[in-house]
Image (spheres, rainbow, N blue to C red):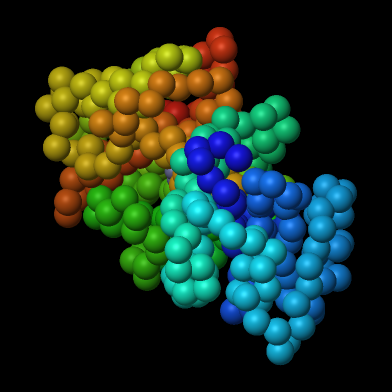
Length: 350
Ligand code: ZN
Ligand code: ZN
């Protein structure tokens, strides 16, 4: 095992699904993948999850599954399977009480985060993962394409959101991760979700939606809509935003750093006097989680590589008035950025 590690312990979550395909339930009963430097990996599961584990891709991997009964101590069992270990990496989302229990049974072991090892793998998507993101992108695009059916004056954000929620599932997602319908002044809060505000004529509405496909891969896309005619000062700013987002997507290429991509959009907004209105980073990586490495943000000097998948989602936010955001998921390829979302970027009048 690299990085001087003797073992790695991975609890249920996206890291476990990435490494094994097993979408294990995060129960109070211990489920853990034990990866050992000098022996085969073993999956520890509660006895009542054994059939589920055997029905999962673990079987195709030929992985040894060790089931523990209700009265056994699974931490002690795992410790015995790990043997004498010096440095143990644990997944970054492991519950604190799990980690504390492992630390208690192995007081001389050094526990470190497995994030640097696993994130480096997860960041570079293979062709199958890229296909899964493309499928997810097409599904969420189809929901945006139907927006005129639901987003109408006189309806509340919550009513519109309920319809979008159903449409995300109807489009093939296994679950809905978030539905943001930010109308009028609510659009100025980037993570506003839904409220009972009634949408009215002249409103700008930010719709940012995403879900998880049966493959485990996520969708995430934002378009900005307007009901009737918006204020002229909004239109001027929106065209700057559109230019910034397009320039950032066009700039994606291997070797470009994450912060360069962020800076390209930020400087276009700044030239138009909108620097303070762009209050968040440009984007985030996406895969089995909606937010994962690499983050497209000032200070991240990581160079882009083929296979990296991330959002490009600049926005501007004027408190008390409106907000706007345009978001596509883009994959870095040897030839440049390949967007997975294809809905029009113009302000969409409903
Ligand atoms: Zn996003
Ligand atoms: Zn989003």
